[in-house]
Length: 191
Image (cartoon, rainbow, N blue to C red; front, side):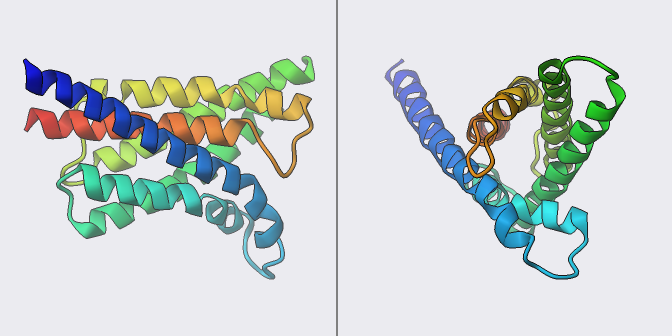
């Protein structure tokens, strides 16, 4: 009984630390496009992927420390994260163009929900395919729900006209990082 209580306290504490690291990467993310745009000749999707480097680094650390994957799988998880970021941005842009003539706030909510879902979904799919990745779809549900719901914060960023700061990235990255940690810890506990 005592082991269970200690385990829950340690897990809660580690999830808070992981979420704090996600907030930190989320604060760095909106600062990078200005730097990356100065790169000459880089294609648009590569520039978008490079914006995800801080969060991809956090994912690399989480996969390496919280799973029994080999080192190369942690690198692959970081690459999946960068690809997920590109897919999320493209899904948000596509959705924004498809929803038609509706209020800007509602259009941004729809685009954010789509981008959040696609981003967390691509991450879950890619990391789930790793050798020690969680195969149980239920393990990924918290990450998908958090990522989708947090995506709606795109509307808040737009309403506040935030450029070099963001509400979306710190919340989304903190939530998705915690969801990823829960999925990886759940897989480790089942083995």
